[in-house]
Image (cartoon, rainbow, N blue to C red; front, side):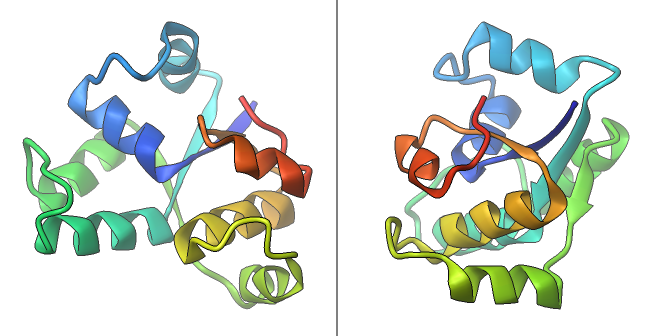
Length: 126
């Protein structure tokens, strides 16, 4: 299975937050699961930590090292992703979430998220 982590799921996973369900955590660490994180999520984390809206127990550099050590792949923003964002209806106004939805659609990825608005885009949710 190929999955894309929503930003809040990434933060919960990294921080050991109990809001991440046991089944979600098990899927993320399962060796046969291909796990992706959007660069948009890292950008969102960088902005929110810099303005004090989000606190992490580690630096963004440490986060990147952990992702690499756990073979979690970074999903860079490509022109096809941008074109997909442009075609999305405005069910969701958050630009980071819209990019995550677009990337999942273009790359045929399931999204691990607790954001129910993603379903309005026909995204495959876990």
